[in-house]
Amino acid sequence: MNTICNEDCLHCPYEDCILDRITPKAYDELKSMKPISELQALREQKKKFRTQQYYQKNKDSILQKRHLNRDEINRKERERRQRNLDEMRAKDRLYRELHRDVIIAKSRAHYAENRESCVAKSLKYYYEHREEISARNKEHLALHREEVNAHRRELRKKNLEERRAKDREYRKENNARIRASERAYYALHKEEINTRRRELRRLKKEQAVAEAARLQNPMDCDTLEENKTK
Image (tube, rainbow, N blue to C red; front, top):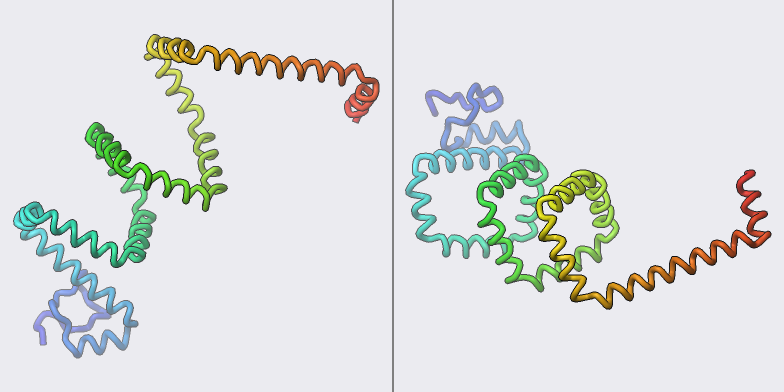
């Protein structure tokens, strides 16, 4: 029997359990008061607390061992994650939903401090897995097309003024380079651009002629007047 803990878990005055191991008597009493799920959660909480205490006491040696064996650790972590892929993804989603603001703030701060290395790493990964990423994006778009399009429209509407301001600022700062690039593009695609412009002018002219002919038709004029009176 512990001289400090009275094993009355329901009225315990301490924030964390002071017993390393719960006695059979206390476990039976606690089991009669709480469901098994709460007992498991309590055991997990105690285990996590002991792990945190051990880590704080031996932080330097743990980090040194991890650095020396990081390849082996990463391999085992990948294998463990692959074995429990669905469960791990569900946990990750739940964690991101509960800590969304904190995660976004940390990501932005890390990106601001390490922008060049982050961009280089992203480009390297993209070029190494380009086909896989493209196939995954196409599959996701096919399954969630309406949802994706609605999200894109909402983002464009939300950030429209901000994007326009950034575009104006960018063009103002890089006006000479943009104009030179446009002139170079026009020189390379002059025939194609002129053909497209002539086609657009022809379509506009046909539409104007059709509209004028419709307005000159008495029946169309009567219909137009009726619509105005309504």
